[in-house]
Length: 245
Ligand SMILES: C[S@@+](CC[C@H](N)C(=O)[O-])C[C@H]1O[C@@H](n2cnc3c(N)ncnc32)[C@H](O)[C@@H]1O
Image (cartoon, rainbow, N blue to C red; front, side, top):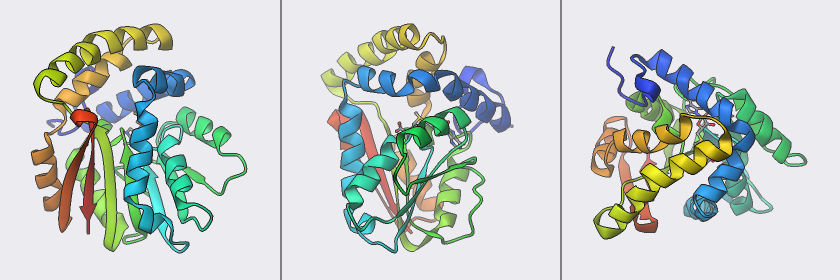
């Protein structure tokens, strides 16, 4: 079966792609946060904050239910919680790497955040349960993008929203300079600091393979989103896909 999502190491079917992705994140979990901040020059914090701010009105509602998919060590989830302030919505983080969730859990002591180990393509929740579903830098790693979008749409109540934050490919001169960094410098530093060969070469390859914003928006509409838009962040190095059911 052709892979219509991530394919690390040339994985040939969705099950082997998902397994390879989970093993890869588990292998870098101990150094994930450090590498994220170093390799993005801390701009990652800005992107999480900006994404959370886009959903401020939902996050302020105490009765709102929010799901952060592919939450990893929880930084997007924490940004959502901070944005909610005192009267914060009920927020759940989901990831299929136990090692990543262990770190999220250790970082969230004393908060009401909950973590669930599950595959984003097959979530243990009934239909229409959530007001907001987010995914930061995780959606690109799903083994089947359309199935991922359908699963998000299934979980949202009518009028519910989703926010998918992920890398893009900036154009023009900025794009050229960035590609040198992203394809050459970043994999070298990532491999050195993580001590694991592979994941940081997979990162630029996965971004290259990811659908363009135009294509993603079409896929979102076909998956059942009434509204779909994309906002570039930092020259399009990253961007936020917003969808409304
Ligand atoms: C690049 S990390 C992003 C973590 C976090 N959201 C952040 O912004 O730092 C991607 C995460 O997605 C998770 N992931 C990838 N595919 C998944 C799937 N099918 N189901 C659940 N989690 C998945 C990985 O285990 C990993 O923790």
